[in-house]
Length: 203
Length: 125
Image (tube, rainbow over all chains, first blue to last red; front, side, top):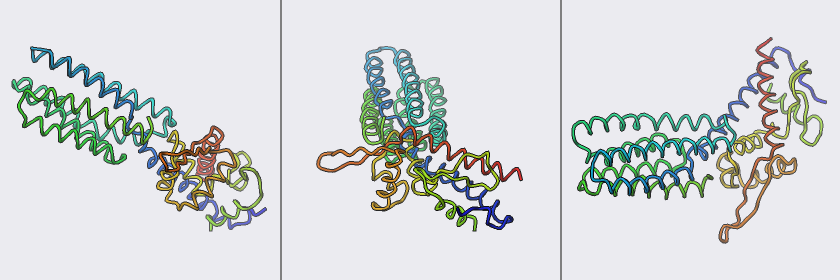
């Protein structure tokens, strides 16, 4: 049996050490590349879209802007919780910590625009400009999906760009369109793209 | 060189999954699974470890392999029952999906432990 015992002792340990490190690096990189498929939950997106449609119709019936705002905030919070749970569930199905890097990368890209949206919501409400909120939310949520999904499969940043485009329309359209555009973007958009991701890349 | 020495060790001996100790004087270390030590098979198993299933084309893109090369390596992994293969039709197009089995996942975990053990052993010297 050919053995490493026969090799020069000075070179052998260094080579083995580097070979093992190289193998571990290759495994990690392959998993991270392959992990792109698992970072964004498809069926979770569909569920978020359904909640947005229901929340949007409920919010559209309200006469007071405060109630409209409260319903949309509750819808967003519920949607984000469902999205997070769906990501965790998908990660667990694919092998727990192996998923960590793509998931963390998505969260790091997604969080800053979302935080900006929260702060600007407070500012615009205080300034008495709630009509600008649908455009702002869609634009910044879309920006978060684009930056978070920059290293993911192509459909994810494309989805983000669609949200951003809907947000631009909402910013310049009559204020009466705002709620419908939110339903179309957060509802219809999430359902369509979520179903596509689930079908093409798994739940 | 060290890499050549590993290859030499890989080809030494025969077995179902081909196992042999890689580190000299390291009786406490787990045995090396030469079946997944091969770079492309290692890539296939690693990619499947983070996905419920992957199609032939997805795997081909991920491990940057040709059709023929990927077929040979997936067949070897199938024979060792590390992965399973499901063939179906999507419309008129044939579709081949691969999944990692429980023994395949255990083999990858053993291999990871082995690589970590080698690094630890070398650092301790």
